[in-house]
Image (cartoon, one colour):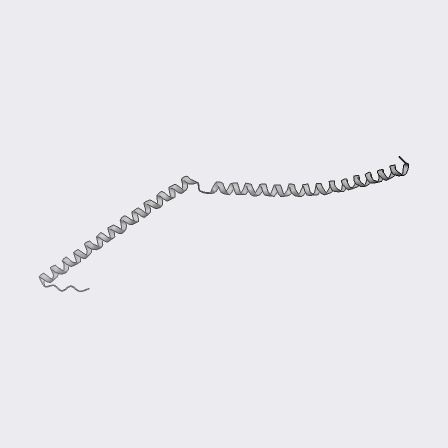
Length: 109
């Protein structure tokens, strides 16, 4: 091998080494950015986990459904009782008018 060929190889290797050094710097920058991004994502997941812990679970939902069922049933009972009381008041009103008519008393509203 000649001296010239040896120098050409050394120059080429020097260029390759320089190129690798530049790439190493770029990789460090990319690594730092990825590290920041990973930290942000992990913090986001931590916040999501904390919020999910506050949410109702199945047992809580079942208790709410049971409570709503009880309220709906009580409302149904109350509606039926009001209907019965309305019929009783109508019957009582009719009797009062019948009695008033029999004794000759005029009812006015």
